Amino acid sequence: MSSEPIQSSAASQAPPSSTIWRDLGCVLAVTVLAAALGATFDLSEKAYRFTRGMERFQLDELPGTLLVLSIAMAWFAWRRYLDARREVRHRRMLEEQAERLLADNRRLASQALQAQELERRHLARELHDELGQYLNAISLDAARIRDLSSEREPEIHRIALQLMQSATHVYREIGGMIRRLRPIGLDEFGLPSALEHCVEGWRERLPEASFSVTIEGDFSGLSDALTITLYRLVQEGLTNVSKFARRSRVEVFMVRAPREDNGAQIDEIVVTMADDGPGTDLTKPRTGLGLIGMRERVEALGGEFHVASEPQGGFLFCARVPAHAGLAEPVN
Ligand SMILES: Nc1ncnc2c1ncn2[C@@H]1O[C@H](COP(=O)(O)OP(=O)(O)O)[C@@H](O)[C@H]1O
Ligand SMILES: [Mg+2]
Image: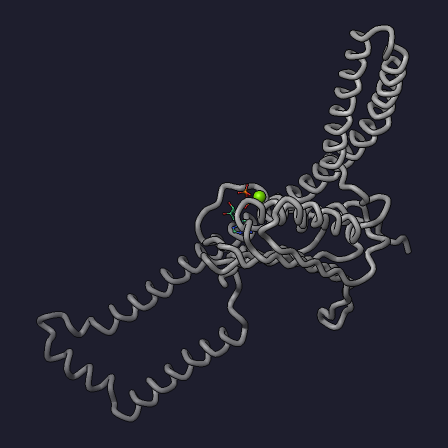
């Protein structure tokens, strides 16, 4: 299964100092060897004798000319070295600038997502508390009119029944909107139950697919940003299954477990979703925003997001996020 190419910053690396010393050693060794060979075989004398005979071609000027050429080449190389150093410095500066912009971008994206979730939550509460109450009152009033008019006013009785039906319809619609805005049970029963409920909904909608959910660990005490991110990851993954892999076997894993990283223990949450559907060629350009949004959400919380797939080879994504992400740093 091919995995998505990982974008790594092309950090310019200076050669290690051991290489520089080795090269300098080579230069000195070659010079000493040339001197030794020259001394052993009297090369200069032979060259002098040879070039003196060719004086009419000015060949006796060759050693001096070659010396000037080598000094000029050294100067030329030095100038190119300075150019290269300037170029590397410039590139490094651009890379740092790009990294800073990327970090700013991530922060902005994270804030935008948080603001969006806050607004959704607020809207869901308003819809539930305000509209829900009034609709309930309308239903009760309509029921009362229905009862009072049942024998005397058949027309009013009919209208009251219609009113009740309309109220029920709007109530159901609002229920759907609230569910889309704020996942059911997330606040009341916690993330594992909300996810089970979400998968249950897809089991009914996609009878040809099979779903298995494995959740291990304690998911209490997570920040709201992390909880909603984990939920939205699974939600988007399941939406993609409904679009691209309707007849597949889908496995969802969510685990909270400590991991060893350079001797330090990291408490992290790993979410993996895999299906054995038709997969896709990840090297081809894609237009959708779902996977990009998932990556944004995870990276905004300091996590990692990976996707792997190949044609006819299923589809998998894996997100690892520190469990403390989004919580205020402890004050020392
Ligand atoms: N479970 C899956 N199986 C096969 N292909 C998938 C799956 N999930 C995503 N893809 C591929 O990745 C692309 C990008 O997905 P996404 O970013 O969610 O965008 P969208 O759902 O809007 O197309 C999809 O167009 C599809 O080709
Ligand atoms: Mg999608």
